[in-house]
Image 1 (cartoon, one colour):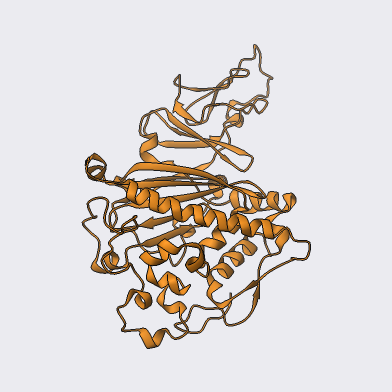
Image 2: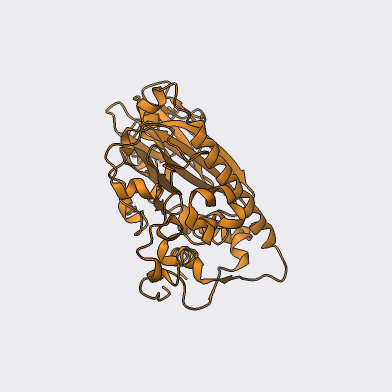
Length: 385
């Protein structure tokens, strides 16, 4: 890791970016799927989307199709969506309820319990050495964290999910995350590598030029920095309450919305500082970042679709009281965030396109891009570099 000056977040020496080929080359893309996406926790859906017994979701992670199921005992189960007979897909729908008590392969009718054990085959006679217990579905780790369902293809080797949270992620215990409901969902396919979007997320040098409206709402972003200690002269402004120096929202604003005003009832247990700042991040690379505001929370999920294509999914979470309130205009929050994300997507696609230059082999990171450097080191570590 790069040494940093106490109280200043900037890099103190020039650092190279990852090679340009890491964002384009199909062979390297497969390497990252194996080393990163198949060994870390990936967000699936909210737990209440699988509230009913026998409710299921299927999810594509790279080339892997995963089945997540709520069994009759109320527990979540997750497996590779692959029959142990000859490898057929078991469940073809993206979501729904199992049609029968068991998981039945549509190809040759091999039948599995909701916990993945093989119950019967369709053969008239099995070989003498055939052991049913050797043919259970391939396990996938599954966990619910604060109302969010995550899976990990590492199965029993998966590390605890709390170890995957960014060490600098704020504690979101004052937000009732498990109780919130999805009020809006947004999907977008971006023509860029998944790492490009994460790198964009990890710096604000682009904010004044790309996010003009957001930079009005969050004045420190107008200075092309993310937080007060990103300023080399932060100590001069340590007692300055101007949000351009202290962070937080512009005076008079209360949340991220088109007019800066609340779209629902504020959460009751937030501290004065949490309310003042107005936005709090929790990051779990490579899959999601969560942003908590005074009156709503959003979770943004990335999913790789190819070396130069990434899907982004956003869910806006509100209290049931807000969603039941006919006067609440959640569109003011939804539309504002969509604008910001579309701006980020456009910038990321321009970045991706430029990486195809025959002359560009790698780039250079500047002081304000310390978090990009940290992210790229995370990638390097997972690749064993």
